[in-house]
Image 1 (cartoon, rainbow, N blue to C red):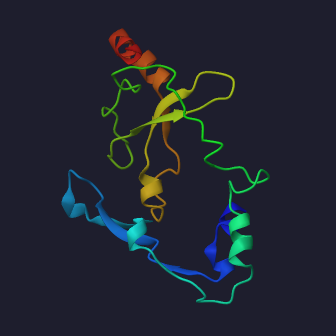
Image 2: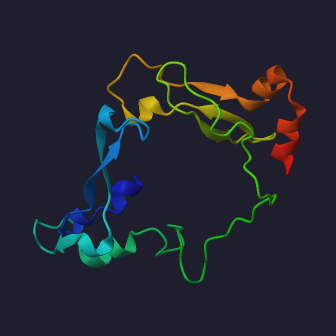
Image 3: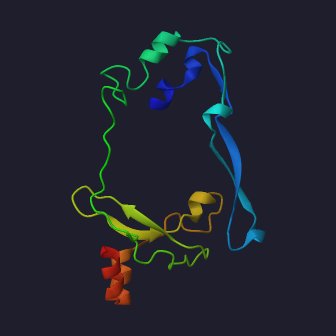
Length: 168
């Protein structure tokens, strides 16, 4: 619903260049593996907006009134109601992931990244996941989700120094 409300086409404005393509290597360790092309949001100076390019459905004033944060019924960031800033619950210099950079996916050979799954009534679940399917959605050979919980790995490895270094 929010995407419909903030769409400037309803007020007759056409926008070009909101996204641009970038190319990323599939593997930093193996540049010959090729690259992936992605679209990312463009900088505000690179976006071109043309007013009255199409027939408007609402007036610019109606569109502005429907934007989040402009009325009490549509909450959003406003100068009189600043967005709350989150304070970190614990400050530490090290990573929260004790096995960071050490785990490799058995299916694709890529490093697994740290992943935190928040829980409503308990501590967050810390683990590692392979993001290959997110970056290459056409490849059906790789499992869709591949997650390994950190507490299970540390328990199997039996290395107490990893758990101690994680708490620092």
